[in-house]
Length: 459
Ligand SMILES: [Zn+2]
Image (cartoon, rainbow, N blue to C red):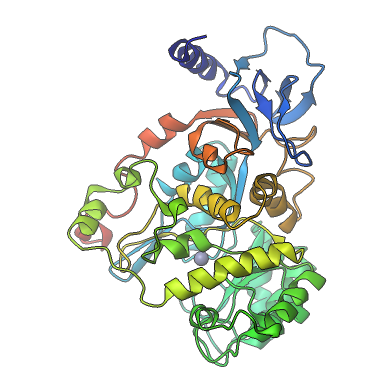
C-alpha cells in the first residue's frame, strides 16, 4: 500500500475508533518486555481499554481495526517519572495544563509522575479531569506539594505531626507518591515513614542547596525509594550543590562504587535526567539536537524571549553532565535499577536554549543508548522499570495481556536504532487512539506565557 493511502486509511480508522477503547491492531511488530528483538504482531486486541489477547484474535469485523505496515513498531507507552507541568517566568511558577500534557502524550508518554508541584491543587483538578475524560492528557500520577524548601510557604519548624498531616491529606486525595527537595533529615524521615504507611513511594532531589545536605547516604537507610539527578551518597562531601560536587568528582574515587552499591542493596531506582542537563550546556552530543521545530509549540511571546536573548549556558553543568554519563553507564553495569525521568519544565528565566517537555524523553532514551545501554533495556527502563518503581507493574509498563492498552507506534525498529522513537505517529492510552500530529498541532503557540501582562495577572 502506498504511504499516502495508508495514512488516509489510518486516519479514517482512527476517527472511528478514537473513543472505542476496543480495537484490534494487525500487522507491524511488537516490542515485548523480555525479547531483544521485535516479534511479528500476531494480532493485538484491546478490550475495555486493556490488552485482551495477543494472537488468536476474534475476527469480529464490528471491532475497529488498525492495519499497520511492515515498518511500524508497537512499543509500550512511555512512563516519565520526573515530569513537570510547570512553567516559570519573571519569578512566577505556574502549572500548565494546556500544552505540556499534550506534548507528553503526543510523544508517546502515556503516564507521567509530576515530580514536585508548585500548585498541587491545580494538578489535582487536572488529573481528575483527565481520568474522567474531560481533558486530554497522559495518565497523571500526581505528587502533591514538594516536601522541603521548594514548596511555597514551607515551614522549617514543621513537627513530625505536621508532616504526617500533610502526607495524610494528600494520600487521601490519591497522590501516587511524594517528592522531597532541599529537605531536613528529620522531615525526610517523617515523610518516608508516613508515605510508606500509605504504600506510597518517596523520591528525592537530595544534595541540593542546604548545607550540610541530606545525601543519599542518609536517605537510603531511611527507606527512600528513588533518587533524582545523582546517585550521590557517601561519594559527595555535602558542602556544595550536588551538581557541582559530581562535576568536581574524581571518577576513580572508590566511594562512588560504595554509594552505588548502597542504592543497589536497597533497590533504590535512579532517574538520571541527563538529556535536560546536557541541554544546559554547550555539548554537541547528537541526542540533544532538534528533530522537529519544538519552539513552534511555545507561545509567540515565549519564542520572542528566546529570539531576543542569545543562548546562555550554565557555567559548570558541563562537568556534571560529562561525569554523569560515565556514572550512569557504571551504575547500569553494576546492576543498578534505572527508571525514566527527564525533568525539564519550561523555565524562561534563565538558560534560554531550553528544550521542550515530551521531546526530552526521547533525548534521554537516545543518551542511554549512546552511553552503551542496550536498546531493549533502554525501552524497558522507559516503560516497565518506571512502572515497577511506582509499584504499578501489574497494570502498566509493557505489552502483556491484562495490562492497560497503553502503546506508542513508531516507524522503524527502535531496537536497531533508538532514534526511531522520534518517528512516533500514533499513541494509544487505555485503548483510546491519538494521532501524534493532531495532538502537536493542537498545541502550537500554546506553551508558556502569552504576554508579560497576562502572565503577571495584569490583564
Ligand atoms: Zn524536577
